[in-house]
Length: 243
Image (tube, rainbow, N blue to C red; front, side, top):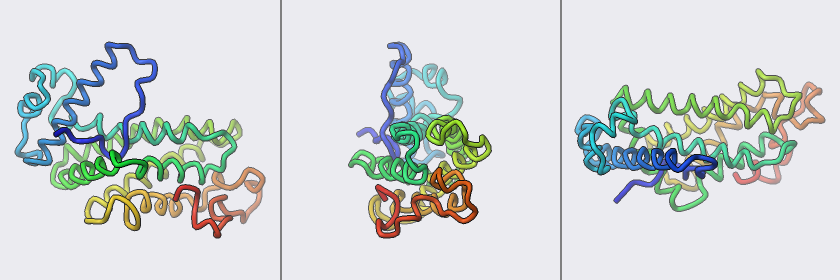
């Protein structure tokens, strides 16, 4: 049985050519095989040959796409970032950024059974990464790539007057909110939904990391010295939309 995608479904193929879609599909087949084998035997008990055989591809095909066995999980991990950025990109410019970020994070971490099943795969990968430096390096690189790709999405939502430094800081904070929540959650047996879940923890991390950022204040209040982020101005809602 193939593993589901970690913590979020992949975004659509967009304008990719047929060849590019076939390459992406092959990479995902290899990535799912790697996740299965890491769960069954751990990284130390899995070889690139094992992964290629499970994926039904030649070993030379494996090495065409990946330098080593740990790299093979990158497409699955990257798919989560692709999906949540796509959800954020659906928000209209001018929407309070705090609300938009929290809504996209919550949706990407709790929208469906497939996401919940994928979270368990992610938990297994992150647990394996604690004893595998190369696997940790893949995790950190995927998060760095996601942060860089998040910058233009936030810049569009923030508007042309947003300071580049503020946009970069917010992209870093939002990415780290998800990364930290998944890392902490993976060390526990907490459920995939509800209190203690990645979605709940990620929104909490987002609040704590961004509470003082001027970019998250309502546009009319940004010039003031004491205005709170828009998500904190409606306590009767119990948090940002979707939380």
